Length: 108
Image (cartoon, rainbow, N blue to C red):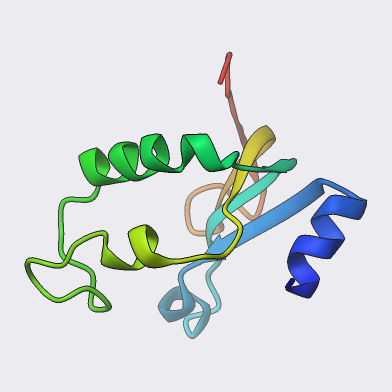
């Protein structure tokens, strides 16, 4: 069991930051910050997760040769985690003068 999974089981409150590294070279921050609650996807829901992913992915991953889309997720034996956001912020220092903008999340 990975340390990440053990940590999530102990404390499910998580944070995720995704930034564009090419903008950072120009001293600009462009990205998304998410705070949420993590939980394990039950085994019986894995096929549903795969189906939802398949609907949304429009390009072939570099890790999945054409014709093998979804091979990793179908054959992977690890634990899948889902995150329910409680706060989402959009960061773009070029547009918002360094202030992160709250994104309404409604009822997710």
